[in-house]
Image 1 (cartoon, rainbow, N blue to C red):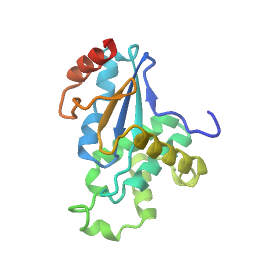
Image 2 (image 1 turned 30 degrees about the vertical axis):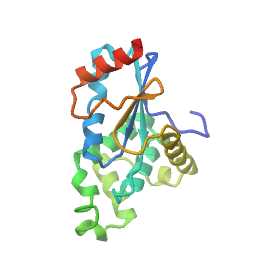
Image 3 (image 1 turned 60 degrees about the vertical axis):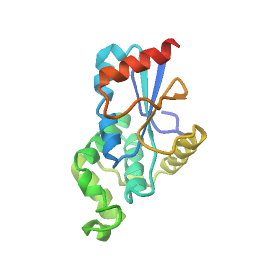
Image 4 (image 1 turned 90 degrees about the horizontal axis):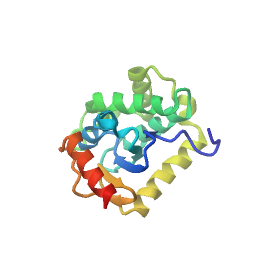
Length: 187
């Protein structure tokens, strides 16, 4: 691993670059995230390289902390697979990381340390050391700049070979996505 960057959140080794900009507590991002394995299973692992980009959204109060926990996992043992383990756990227990109406409820009393401990409990991973890793801060900043440079402000957003694919919706099936990706790649 390059000591200045964490393990890339990338799956597949194909020439078509698909970038998924996701927010780790967003229900629509969860639907997009759920398509990764299915896309790769549609013979996409040799046609696609799928890159996860984490885009923290300010109205999701625990978003920066959860994003940092995901990147901390990628800095430790298991790298990108551990990062997916954290993201999967958060999506599966989303209600534990989202305030009621973005501003109320019992989670208002939860501290960042308690939130990180809950993620560790859900995943069985020790994230505290990686959470403090300065590379995680650098990666979080890189991810935010990269999204802004590409004009991406909402999640989920899909980019295919460097161009935003606004017609791709999280409600569409993986088969529909694959057809749209193939159409864009052929253009």
